[in-house]
Amino acid sequence: MGKAGRFACIGLPMSLTIASLVCLIIVGLGGTNKNNSSLNDLYFFRANTTDINVTPNDVNIPKNPLTDAILNQTVDTAKNALDIKDFYHVSLWNYCAGDFDNGKDKVTYCSPRKNQFWFNPVEVWGLNNTGVDKLFSKELRAGLDAYQKAAKWMFIAYVVAVVATIVEIFVGIFALFSRLGSLATTIVSTVSSFFLIAFALTATILYATLMGSFNNAVKKYNIHGSLGHNMFVVLWLAVAFSFGAGLFWLISSCCCSGRSNRIKYGDESGRKGKYERVDSPYGHREGPAHFQSGPGYQAPHHGVPLDNVGSKPTAYEPYRTANV
Image 1 (cartoon, rainbow, N blue to C red):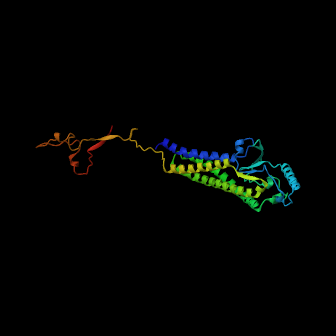
Image 2 (image 1 turned 45 degrees about the horizontal axis):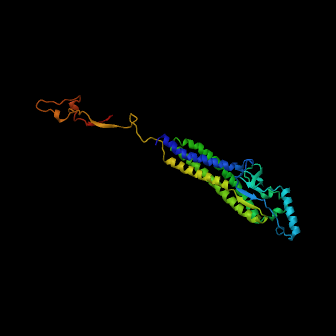
Image 3 (image 1 turned 90 degrees about the vertical axis):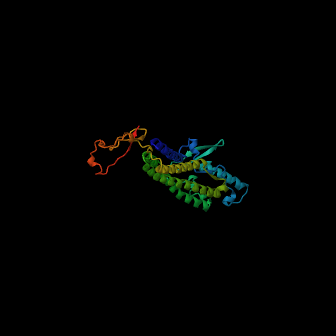
């Protein structure tokens, strides 16, 4: 396999690595621009508060038409006063919120981007020191505490995966020239895939668990949580591309040497030739038909002293290879 074959062998894992990096960048862009509908559809978790409602049973007061009317008015007033939106999207760096407009999502606000971000509904909905946060179950509060801690590790894993993938692309350039370069790229690819898989697993398990705790705690208030399908599809595509790239980097370190299988001797067509008979230093080359013998006949010496014949071992090759 020549250089062209080596280039083709490296091209596939390099393309998969670039595809993985693109998917990681898309994951990081989710929720960064409220005016971009495509980016607004990239979120890990969604809280739907459109039909939020509190009944007398939820706050331990007698249930009657008067208390129902008061509570409904109070909830609507509180929702407007606290500026609670119809939905909230939680992304990697921040959250976005908005209202429904003719049945479609319309994002009106995105919070500032922050490292190791986690979504705190008590703070976002302005429920601090109001006593309302105590209505949340212990399960939800425990889930939010675990979510806060896991979000830090998830963010670190994401950053390391992105950096390692970029390094993998640059190191992969050296893989074009040798299998040793492929081996070095394979090592970097292993690091990248490890942290990328760790990030994807953490995000999937974390938000799936959070969704269950969230729905169990607030479903009686008609608040519903769900996962973002598009975000997880892009995320696991990044994992698949990264894993495939690592596999092919490993193959390229064992195969695809880039050296030609043809050994050249003098001309570009390789070693071509045939054997032809050469003259014997002890007789005429044309064979027995020209052999002379008899009294007084002396064989020609052909430049070889007779006193040297038999005194030393000589190498005689009756055939030689001639290039044609």
